[in-house]
Amino acid sequence: MRKSIKIVLALIVLMINGQIANGQSVKWADKARQAVFSVVTYGADGKMLGTGNGFFVSEDGVALSDYALFKGASRAEIVNADGRRLQVLEIMGANEMFDVLKFRVEMNGQKATALTVAANAPTNGSRVYLLPYSTQKNTVPTQGTVKESTRVAGSYQYYTLELPLQDKMVSCPLMDSNGQVFALAQQTSDDTDKNTCYAIDARFAMDQEISALSLNDGSLSSIGIKKALPDSEEQALVTLYMASTTNREAYSMLLNDFITKFPQSADGYVRRATFELGKSLDEAVLAKAEADLDKALEVSADRSETLYERANLFYNYQLTNPEKTYKDWTFEKALNEVREALTINDLPAYSQLEADILFAMQNYAEAYTAIEKVNASAMASAATWYSAAHCKELMNAPADEVIALIDKCVGMFTPPYTEQAAPYLLERARIYTNAEKYRPALIDYDEYYKAVNGKVNDQFYYLRAQCSMQAKAYQRALDDYAEAIELNPEELTYRAELAVVNMRVGRNEEAIKVLDAAIAKDASYAELYRLKGLALLQLKKNNDARAAFNKAKELGDPQVNALIEKYF
Image: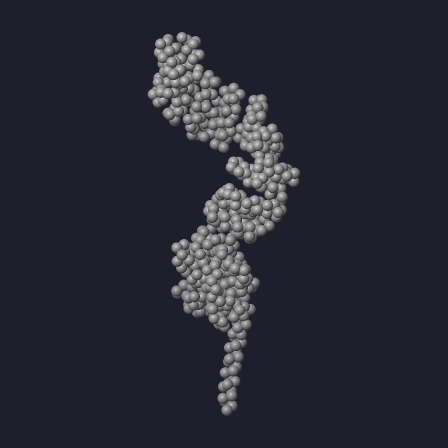
């Protein structure tokens, strides 16, 4: 009897010891298992790509898993411990080398049961537990010990564990004795000891994040699921800027995400209004843009900047010449808002917009006053000096005043000129020509030609030829008209002008050849016959000249009658 009692007592002791060995896991395992879930990923064709595991690390749906499971996926969903399916909302960070991924699950207003990430790494020899995914209660974790840990990627740990890992346990959480997750189980190779597995520090996975440069990250771009915005507003704004030059649909989603994440940032509302107005000027779109712009002003931490951005939008809206102006979105509204911005913060950029609006309203005198403020600042540029010259020109100011300003404009560049200076050289050539300063104009035409490496069109040769004619540089005029004709043989004005230059230098026979070639292209061009008549008169071929004049008269040339009266 005593022997039986001893055996029973021994069995009880063994059972108690077993419970003590497992007791710590029993305390937290049932609740912790609710944080572990199954993951299903899908390709672009909608077909299942793979299955795996993951677990929540925050109540709002932040979770960890392995990168390999998500690579190439266009969509993913989880199946939680209760068997409920939830969609993966966004990728929050990834590292392909260590095969970890952080993402957010769409919780639909509910809270997730989340594991706490251990602040300290377990020591070698510590008992640890792998918590598998299961929909069954009273899940028993797989026990093991820490065999070795190696420092990687700075202050993180990579673990070798004495713990058997089954096929479907990859990315399951590894827990310490306090029920806190310290690592993710990782895939082992076929030749690995079946009682040995490896794990990467959960803190490392948690610290993966999205930055402004993530749009160019190959690891992230290979996942088709939406990427989260950076946690920093500044970085998020850079991300928005970079995304705006690529996929418009993705950019639209990011704008909405930005406003959700940073509801007190005026930038999000202004950018969304700008984006929507760039797509359509439909009444409904305008109403939404108006609401965004009003909200931007309401939350703005920098009222002057938001007023400036609103004014810029109203100004650009009016420049599109809408058939019907939306509410009060006029140049006047834009002007009032930018002037209010100027009363708060007198910045050159605001004065530049004020000048642009006034110029569009054809108030050139006030526009010039505004642009003068810009040119007195560090923001002065070739463009602002050109704007000043253009205002003066439209105010019918003396030519010397206009030239002084356009000289300031071109003076912003240093010879040898590049394509950046080319438009301003061409404009100065035009202004010089209008002021009858033909030789300086020719110099600018030549500098323009060099600045664009000779890549000019027929109109350029025509303009330079006209200037050469006025400068009495007749051979240059002949050469340039010939170039214009070669580039555009159907433009008969060039041939008529070439004939005029030939006549000016006494080459009347050549002028007649040019005119006959033009007439062969269009026999109804009256001016050609009048010019031919003048050339024939110089050659003393009066009868032929009379016939040419009569033909010009027949075709309705208004100037030929005076010539007929004079010479016949």
